[in-house]
Amino acid sequence: MAKDELVFLPLGGSGEIGMNMNLYGFGPPTARKWIMIDCGVSFGDLSTPGVELICADPTFILEERENLLGLILTHGHEDHIGAIALLGPDFKCPAYATAFTAKLIESKLEERGAKLDLKVIDLGARLTIGPFDLEFVTLTHSIPEPNGVIIRTPLGVVLHTGDWKIDPEPTLGPVTDSPRLRALGDEGVLAMVCDSTNVLSAGESGSEMRVKESLTKLIAAQPGRVAVTTFASNVARVVSVCEAAYAADRSVCLLGRSMLRIVGAAREVGLLPAGVKFVEPEEAGFLPREHVLYLCTGSQGEPRAALARIARDDHRDLTLSEGDTVIFSSKIIPGNERDIFTLINDLVEIGVKVITEKDAFTHVSGHPNRDELKKMYEWVRPAYSIPVHGEARHLEAHADFALTLGVKDAIAPRNGDLIRLAPGEPEVIDEVPAGRWMLDGDLLLPEGSGPMRERRKLAFAGAVSVALAIDEHGDFAAEPAVAIAGAPREAPGVDD
Image 1 (cartoon, helix red, strand yellow):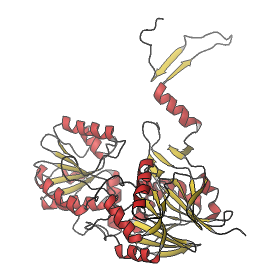
Image 2 (image 1 turned 120 degrees about the horizontal axis):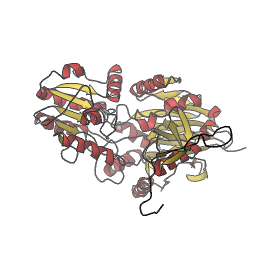
Image 3 (image 1 turned 120 degrees about the vertical axis):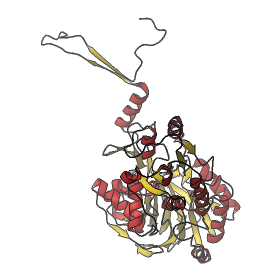
């Protein structure tokens, strides 16, 4: 009779940052039961023309869906829940999330007209799903209600951290539950599957409280209208900006669809302090310039977001001009440099003062630097380390770092690596197909599908089409009509 095994399988988020999708399996190889942790997206770029969202290829688990017992969502960032409305209904299993994350998921489901058995659980909840005994543990991150997941099985205990940092002074929500993590270390942890995003950064990531103090001074010093752009999901930062504005006798107006949606969700579940109030855009336009602050989407230069439209003088509710200030309370996500620098240049051209994290202390990361990673390993004391949530360079650096912290071994997986965690020493035992699906309009298409390949060719080479009108004798009824799109009309230096 085949023995039970505990396995881990990343389908997305290992070897890249984004589209996190992780599977844990328990049972004999021919009859494993599975749970999924997170179901996220990444975003299209110039190499994926016409594509806005990309998710991990779920083919493996779709073929195993009768054995998929549940979908666990650690927190509400897009790279962890963004594909839930696209894929979740096809998994045919319940999904579990804490209140704020569940609100964000509900809005996604409603937008797509999708249905999902979504179960709202409490912070610190413990539940049993098949052979998995799961416990949520409270961490800190750049969004409310980030959770690590303790996975207990007959073959050992795993801590799946999700995204986290150690913030000793969070401005919203509780501190990291270090007593619970220390107790877990005393219990004994087989493996920790851990965030690798900032492993290349020394020291600590910094506290939201220090950002709040800096923003309070910065906003008070500005003379005209102030617009602050930040990640809408960072509700703690939104609250900090609001309180800094109130201290400077400024009312706050929200601009941007995701800002309104996420702040609304935070208010519905009771996360916003009672004193946080907003004015409508129509009212804000009549306030003196020195008594209003706008909180805007668009910190990554997204062309359709509020701030980019303001910079193009294409926003119905706000015009900025000389004497006004825009503060970026965010970092540049790699790959967005061109869009952000274009946005900053557009703002400078209309006379606006621009302040970024390079000019003042306006942002801290939501992921752990090395000192925080070291502290987590000291608390949890796992026998083995499985770095995830990072590019290849992050995973390999994390594995090397973990070895210096006393783990027996570390495995830096790539998407599709099937790792047997127990029995025996952890090792990669198989590789399953892993890839990407792309959202093209309302269709999800595999990355290498014909339409995707053809569109990429057209994007880089252009197209020439010829229309011919033929009469009943097979002769030309008119001159051919040639249409050229995106291709040069003549080659320089080439004779006819």
